Image 1 (cartoon, rainbow, N blue to C red):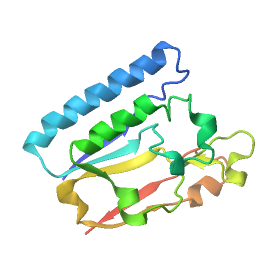
Image 2: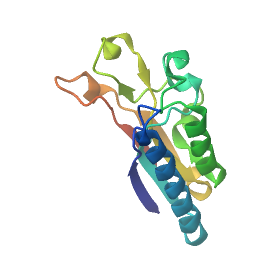
Image 3: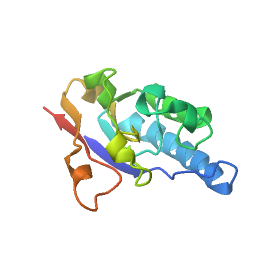
Length: 157
């Protein structure tokens, strides 16, 4: 199994070079995955994607329509990766169950559960049947001085 850990640039604000950089970064990732998939069918891609895949993955989708985490163009890039033969491991195991991995430090987001799912594991077809569990571990986020992210955990057989 080839494990690839990523940090996708945030891309905000949208009307800046940061957004274009994110688009180009994702295009480079897609090209890399196309090349790697030719020689390895066992790939796990994990990390902070800075992409909210769908409306069910954020507490208030309307407020993120013009955000680089949720822009349709960005979600289409994630769909391109999935169309290469990858699967969202969390959704595969948990269906529509809420599963946020990020809560902003401001405005009591953690306390109000105003979160989003931007940390992911995408697995290739051949790895899919080896998934035993995928869960989001909220415990670290409740600590004093935590990260604004909390771990997503993938368990394989």
